[in-house]
Length: 322
Image (tube, rainbow, N blue to C red; front, side, top):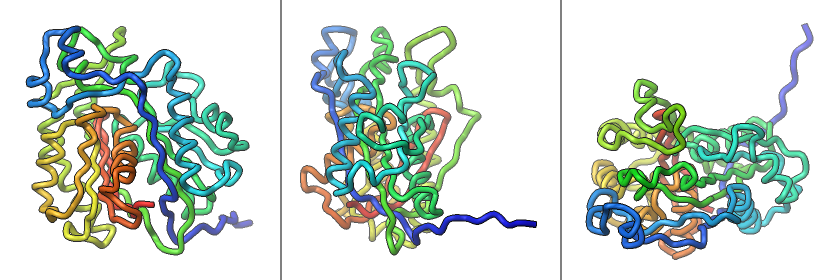
């Protein structure tokens, strides 16, 4: 029997550059208090958000994704023609068909790449990051662009203060390329489908619903083990972690996870939720970009990532920052 030939990949993959886009419109808690029965103290005490960004009409999901992807390409030093795989993680496309990744790639001048959208809830970008790294290691791709983009304001019920104060818009991106040694660690991913309706858009409705207490209990009791296993598979421990960047869903969850992991005091903890809100698939790359831009994190730092959300899905991994 004739055997199938497989391409030879790279020993590892690495992040080459990050980019982000935050919508122009800044919405504070005081702004929301003019629209619904809420106030700054109530919001900050429960989720830790002081402000968030909502996209204007011209800031489409495609345009935000193109902006973030373009910055990531510029930071990577690669040309658009060097990229042959584009993944767009999103939970908020304007319509089901067609997917947006091919259009984003075209607007960035990337010629005929493999391109598809991926919906794994707020874990989407971490899922896509690992899929791209695996494609590079197996030889299915040379260089990949991985974007997390959301316009959650399109799917937010402004009459529901428990969700309207949380969700926000934006896009974050990373370019990945081959490496002589692994710089994107093994992913630990999974799902708890028995809680699939905990975060959802109910049938015949357009607004997001969330069983907040159920999600909080799940995140704080089930996901620390995921992070511990991600570190174990990467061959590192809490003392090695320079940056902790989990999904920016709730400041209390972030700080509780960091405490339970026993991270050293020097570890930089991403708290981008304070000014960006919950941007779902975009939250991890947005948080990483903010830390690098501010100088709180630096190139070569070891970062522990975690995405989790609707499905319920989760994915954790250790990466070296570009």
